[in-house]
Amino acid sequence: MNIAASDLSEVDIKADIVVLPLFEAPQPEQYADVDDKIGGLISRVHTSKEFTGKENQLTLLHVQHTGAERILLVGMGKGPELTSERLRQAGGKAFSYIKKLGLRDIAVSSRSIARDLRNGYEARYENVMYFIEGGILATYRFEKYKKAENGGDIRRIAVLGNGISLPLKRLRIVASAVYLARDLVNTPSNDLTPGQMSESALNVAGRNVKVRVLNEKDIKREAMEAYLAVARGSGSLPRFIIMEYKGGRGAPVVLVGKSITFDSGGISIKAAEGMEKMKYDMAGGAAVLSVIKAISEMAVPLNVTGILPAAENMPGSVAFKPGDVVNSIGGKTIEIISTDAEGRLTLADAIGYAIKYYKPRAIVDIATLTGACSLALGNEAVAMMGTDIMLMELIKEASLETGERVWQMPLYDEYRDYLKSDIADIKNAGGRNGSLVTAASFLKEFAGETPWVHLDIAGTAWNEKEKPYITKGSTGVGVRLLIEFLDRLAGLRAPMDLRQKSDDFSAMACKGTAGQPRGK
Ligand code: BES
Ligand code: MN
Ligand code: ZN
Image 1 (cartoon, helix red, strand yellow):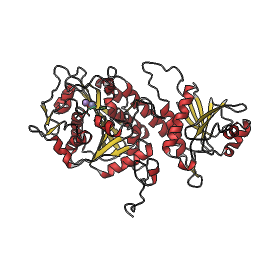
Image 2 (tube, helix red, strand yellow; image 1 turned 180 degrees about the vertical axis):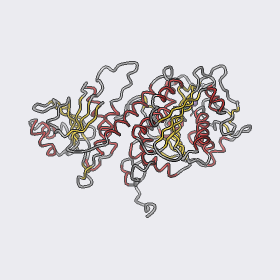
Image 3 (cartoon, rainbow, N blue to C red; image 1 turned 120 degrees about the vertical axis):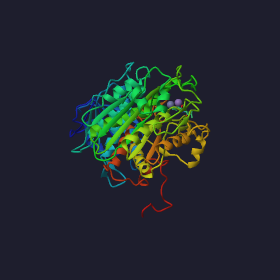
């Protein structure tokens, strides 16, 4: 897909279709030149109220005397209420529609949306980026096993605007990282074993990324018994994947991604209904792999190591069993209550490995860890818990910037009591009550003093229903969030006033009218 800026006007550009985003109570006069050229069609559909500019409204015009034969009017809602999320959604709606028509060469007009209507029409070019990002993310399709009936891939996107310069390279890199994560997660477990996952990681290796893969023997030598126990019931052997990106100085940030290529539950086997979805239990690992690829292409000035403890959780004859006690790399013993609480066992050893060999500046793990995460937050937010407030603030900023919503949950010391074992240092499951937070409490035990954050994506990594720019099936959640987080950690963005952005996601940060902002 080719994305480039163009100085040509809406009437001169040659394309299959020109997209014109318009606000409610649109100012057709803003497009007077276009309207003149096409015989006043825009004013006409406006006067007849066929197109009012309401959010996500689409009206297709067939036109003459211009470089493109079609113009798509896209409703943006009320100008002063414009948010990054609304831009992504409108872009998503518009591009999906265009793809269904089978059109492949799109020009996007930037004049209306590249203005901040709250601030005296100041330039806001990033608005154009949000719109196109939503468009590209919406047109993803998983076609490994079946070609879609309509709509080929979009070939070209021209961004129209006189002399505007946009970080299109970053957009291209981030979008293709999301596509990669979605492809990996949508791929079923017979075609994405731990071995195949390690091959995908090796594809990312290059000048600034080193990839190492530990096999079963190596894992045994490292005494990662908890992780090994999970893998033991499957004929598909585990692969401990390490991706080292070198872009700066100092201790690395370690990203750990849960990489269970299929979670049957093991001996504590899951119910049959819906089990096919457990191929998505490696969505955390897919996100980490894709993030490493993206930041290496963007040369983010940080050292970042990705760790993917890949395994398949199966009830084979030598599988681990409830009641077993296993050791971990850090020396803590674990009593297995449920073999279905397998993710935390693999993460405990990955976190332990990171601490032992990297002395990381921070660890962030991302995992489809608990069904309780979906129960609590549904499909709408990632659950976040951790031991470091600064890291969590940066992740909240990244969340507001990317629209990948994150909600913090508590990590009270009392939750540790739920995991007391009579015969081992800790047990791997603490019952149904609080199982979202006790899972995090389990991981905290292994993170120790290292600044650490846990992101549970069990509710957000998979979509049953299509959203405006998040396709059905794998969502690629976490990729944009973590890239933005790392950019912020590297100091590539100014700190955000979380209250200023609160209107983007009123549920995320309540408006700070009652108290003074901190530090003032
Ligand atoms: N992979 C599952 C969590 C999950 C469930 C992700 C549904 C996505 C959708 C995880 O390994 C698991 O089975 N967790 C158990 C833990 C319990 C046994 C303590 C759970 O949440 O039920
Ligand atoms: Mn499980
Ligand atoms: Zn699992």
